[in-house]
Image 1 (cartoon, rainbow, N blue to C red):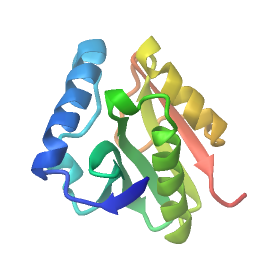
Image 2 (cartoon, one colour):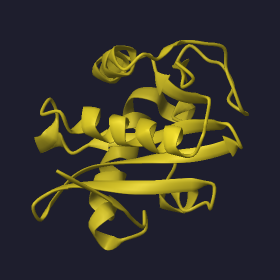
Image 3 (cartoon, rainbow, N blue to C red):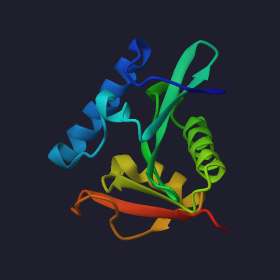
Image 4 (cartoon, rainbow, N blue to C red):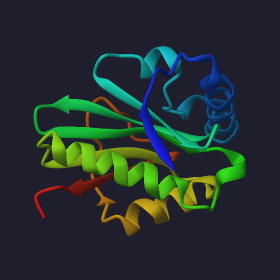
Length: 152
């Protein structure tokens, strides 16, 4: 699989990003925190696409919160690529980039619905633990927060 730094507004990203937003909003309603293409285009975010040959199989982003702190943003494997290891590869790519940047901590916000259980299991297997809210997120029964200490 190839990871490419990319443009979240690229036409080939549109359908998968729209699917991602629709699915999250169908479960979380107004509590869905996922970014659209314009949000992912913010200069604080670095966006990557994952490819198997000519097929887009996922995407993910890393947001710089400050000089030593980043956030995993909008990770998604395509429906056909779920349970194939694509999510793990994307997550490890983001973690490696955070370490390369010298971050000491990496956070994320995710949902609490059954839809999110595989993602939460993936994050926990990578060493993320539950934590308090961070940045400007608001707590709700629909979200949870996780953190990875990158100094270990």
